[in-house]
Length: 113
Length: 112
View 1 (cartoon, rainbow over the protein chains, first blue to last red):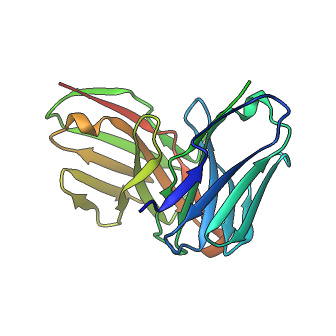
View 2 (cartoon, each protein chain N blue to C red):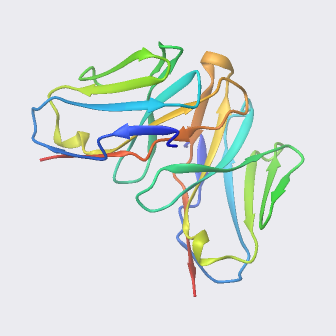
């Protein structure tokens, strides 16, 4: 009964390629997120969607394009991959609320060669 | 200065030890507070929320000091399985304006 599932778990690709990561949550949450965790372990918010609407877009290159077809899904498409994009990408979801914790997927480890 | 700061550690303690982590935040408008735990190569998971009056969950105790703008996590009788990185999270704003600010984490290694 996976709550937040993201695929693929590992992604190895070459510079310049385009790739997508998918995320789905079955918790009925209204808000979904994409986070990037780099080699220094810093967890950085990239995007947040609430009921399919983009609400947070932190300074992320426009090569990264999130898409939310419905509130249970938030996919991340990355164009023209660069070496610096290598990181672990976490999808997360939360209910809307003051004390709402985040539930994370198990991450996608992206390696760009 | 980062908005949320933690001592990165690593803290190396023997099994059975008591260990405490602090986390300071700079924005007095911060509203809710959490500790997350992240095991090596895994996703962060909520450990506990931190309430104004302090709260306890088994061997774990969280405290909030709004005047000094810090939160703490105390782990008693450490187990090997407590080895992980502990992330402090502070939120401000509400609804669509809610922002979560993450610390860099404190690494704990519990040794046999």
